[in-house]
Length: 421
Image (cartoon, rainbow, N blue to C red; front, side, top):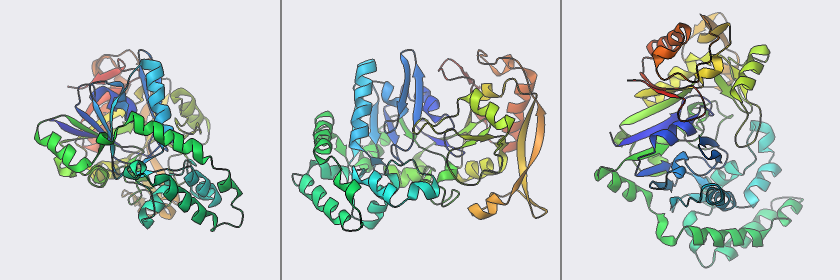
């Protein structure tokens, strides 16, 4: 199979970066199709740890072409910083292409986000993602191809002046360093030639027709999807399989492998309902053992047992063909492991993930309890090397979710991975 996608099956932070890095080693193309620098991928190799916010994980592979798709929002300043990081740490210059239709995060978008207090209301990252997507929907945004127009600077200044008229106190907008932004745009033009600003749909469909290996890498997770997540506590794009069509220009029907990345427990960053959240010792141990702090913001993640109700919804929505189970090693040392099999609400058993955040917030999880294990499993090379309790946990999940588990991650390094036959 020459096409696959890697999609988060929970509220993001499932460990997609490592899985994408491993599976893209021999890929011809890797495409990121949604989100922006609000999402962080952490990749660890022999030279150290890399935290990407725009670039897909495959950017460490020099022979792979990397495309930031039209469904993304791109901050030129942040993207240039990531490209500089690769050059400094690894002397790598990824073969990067930018979707001509991708929207640009300008210096005024994060300011607008603060002025509108969106960060306080829905727990955003403050990176200007929401306002950029709002401009996209309002048909007033800048796209990547606009950066190559001779009148871009004039159009930017005109837009900024009009924005200032909206606020009683536009002093924050007055402090925007326009010249620095224009300098970075010039650098980006030097790094990514106009020839690599592409119409993604024909480029990618041609690659697939020619039998090239194409990987679609999603950001965030299914339960943060703007349409199917816990609205309004969601992201501004579609991390789901449907986002490949709108965010890359390729029909999801062309993607043969759909890998759902599933963390062995549940986490969430920011506000919004999370039925299995544990605010006691269990949650703290999961956070400490799993180093559960956001790659983009550093915020501590809310932690708790695995939620099968939300997970089944995500697997069905994306029609996942297989599962990559991550961070199983974090559960070592727990006397018992709980899994939420269903919810209870007003005395009624709930097995279908609610469509509103309000209803979800009223649900109480009902748990199945498994015996834990003490052994360090981070050096196992097969499922048979795992303690029987860990094997039982994996076997239960595979049967309960009715999707084969093809990968089990037991640590940050590439070598700490079990590929299941």
